[in-house]
Length: 271
Image (cartoon, rainbow, N blue to C red; front, side, top):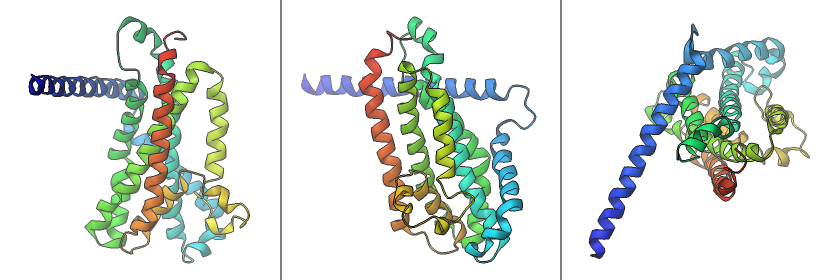
């Protein structure tokens, strides 16, 4: 009897996971179709944005900061591009996830659905964009720089950390938005502060020593640093450098999911 009940529980779990996955795929497809309906470049706009921003930062700061990147403008271009890739993914995915629960409130009131599916689907849509747009270019840069397939594979460690960080923050802000509808305006300021406090277009060495410890609280800084080491240095992947990136992403995910689950029971009264 005990083994039978265990088998039933396992089957129920597999059925639940299968239904969640099917629903997630449907929502990701819907998000992408709605977002890029009538668009010429489609998902490749996720690549155009960091490329244009990289060109702009290079034109303004390239000559000034090139000395911190081996006196090489191309090195600065690649460093700026990797930082912008991370920041673009994080800001777009979390900003879209912020309103996802509230926007689907009417659907949740009609059909019993797992609430977490909506912020997860927003992250999934952006992961798909990253996978077909920016990531292949970053992999090419890595293979040309390191001449090693190991470095290309190691690239997925900080990228996974980036997805975990974005997922955790998405859970947090989508839950908070149910209670505070002004959060979207405040979050724009948070993203701006985060982008300025992240060494994207400037080297971390120019930051005053007194302020550098505060930059370590930035969850994106170790992720960018790890991606740059793997993709641009030409050296074997430094797993010790990747460790803070993984820890940063994991902490964001745990905190965000814990808060989401804690507040979830109060959502339906406010949707």
